[in-house]
Image (cartoon, rainbow, N blue to C red; front, side, top):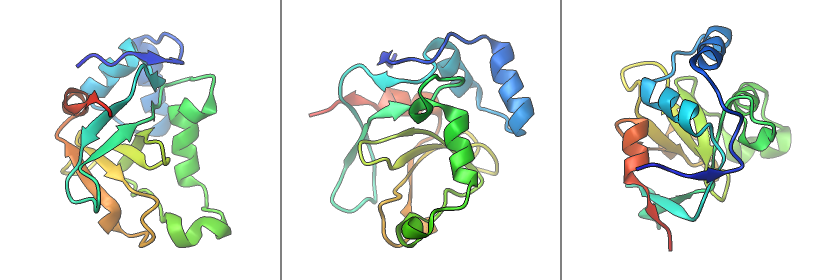
Length: 161
């Protein structure tokens, strides 16, 4: 599926992506690189949702935004959100937030600011997961598989209700 977004980041070329990888030490999956080169994040043009299994009380979650590189709005910027992941969690939020595991890179978010994440290392490299930060257990049990690839995630999207 081709996802159209408003509020897209600036047009990128492959050098921008490779420079980001060199700076961060990450190797982004090629289907995600293609998304960055074509769309570069933003707010989906319309309401979209994706299937999710194992999450209590919900079979589908929405996509509120996807991060892009060098996005002028930090709320949609991949690096700004990656840095937030590495910073200490404020004390008032520690009881509910936990942290995104190092093998996951947040690449988007839902309307509750739960994270859509891409596995960037390990045996699940390239797979997409949902990290439910609102789950008050703040444990690895709040990570849910979405798709085998970023393109698979995009293909799973359907118009929301």
